[in-house]
Length: 122
Length: 106
Image (cartoon, rainbow over the protein chains, first blue to last red):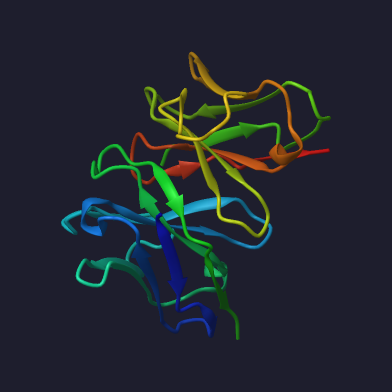
């Protein structure tokens, strides 16, 4: 059974950095693309980033491009989200999401972790 | 980025009702659209991909369809466990974009 557990969330001041981790189990991790999706308080879901199964391709939402970096370590079955220059509007629950397949150009959000809360506040 | 306009933003319904939610894309996305169910405090659940293909384990009362530029999610007979917020998402082009969500309330 697939299991995703996010960690690294917390309270941080504007302009500071935070790194989220997502540990996966119950799957052949290196066969799947991975995403981060977030939900700000009282708002809807917003896709944040994707990394392909082989780590060669990444893409980002316009709102985080240039500030956030997604990466993966297949030896640890873990995907990361490095968040720099954090803003108040980055406050959200961040979900780690497994893609349905290895096809970077046909993504789908197959399985979601429980999420970790990031709060950006002075 | 492609804009996804979802309607209504909320609706009230009763157990046994037929419910339809609509999403419209700001440009062509072929059949690259999925639907997700989200209950407060829980991880979202994948329901439908490629407009109309049910994910494994999703009850057959859920269905998806497309008419020109409008994409619909229909619940044929609403059950108590279906009260939640539903989101469409286009996966045609990066950045992927969600609709604003539809909350189905009792």
